[in-house]
Length: 510
Image 1: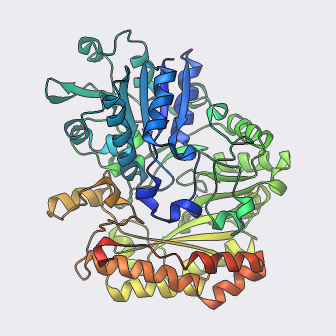
Image 2: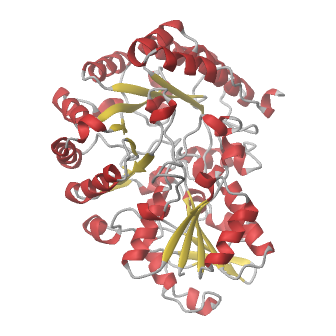
Image 3: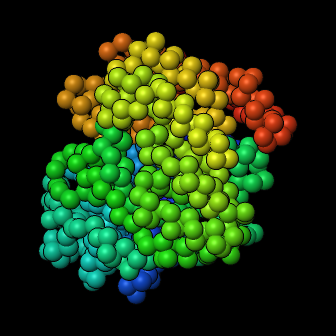
């Protein structure tokens, strides 16, 4: 085998007890994309999803030894923006185990954390032989053409990778990302057939609880799919554009690499066809900004409607408050089977939003847009962030109050984190903020979470407010009554059961 793509298991460290029943288990998007891309070039590939199978290090090593790949490539992303860093914990543990077991293979790694801090990863994590500096498509093709991966003279000719030369990190010249005109050809879909399953395809994967209307039976089988890559916006708390990296600076900043690329609608509809045939009805469209470019999303929505998928699919997609303008577009989205939109409201206070370049939309517009979406028979998962740089206790309460007023059928809030790759991370370094000591500390929900403080708030105050706000929202009687009216009594009971599970936080002395 030429390359085995590995999705590591970090769930317990990242989600605590939520990992057992409540957190999503998402299809490993980039492992699927890279596997299909390499397979299209004639290379023999496979995927080991240690997260979906909940494999121990021992079992994972047994599989790797049996498969005997030339290259083991850890693909470290995840279902949340911070997962590229938090899932490093599982990747490092397994990579070290592979070395300790003396399994003969070369170990590589690609992911947003590595793209953000390539020199640091090479210095700190000696179990990785090779790192990839952006999305890795062309670098992988070039690397797999090398007959001896231990020959550094040959590695130096491969663009877009890094390795230790002697005891110092060495990065080769940057490799380009797949250009728009080559998306269908060089990223030719998903290797769905390589994913593990129990009884039926994709049954080891499960959606977020709210996406399944708080009904356990609707969570699986589940899949996530991109129709575009990247984002044109430059929010300072986000690191999502690290896949577009085009330089070898010591610290990558996502907002420097903003941009979007699209698969053609005719190409991507074939992936929806495959998932439908595999029995999937619950899907996430993972695009950072699905409702942005009408040239791409409206033709795709039309194709989904023509296939009749609008009746069967239960999909969700991302949008911004300020990109929802036309009621007729929402009608097309709903008829395509997109029954939820994830809106990044982030904060109620306009000054707090402007500080992180989130936009100039005013409170009145937020209410109007939410009503417009609801009028189109589309539900909303509203995203909020507590602890943005200008936040105080008063502005965070303002955000919570707005969320209670909007009363969307799904609610999500995170403490503001200095995620590697974001501008906030660079600011934290420049101001000597005490960043998390372990990868799991960057998780929004982990025991050792350490968010950014603000001028007015400590990290502990922000974490406490976020966790209390979660409980306040999900025990809010108007919300529970709305859920029961829409999805039934069992859905309400499931939420009430979920809110009894409390996260432990080191920063709060738990």
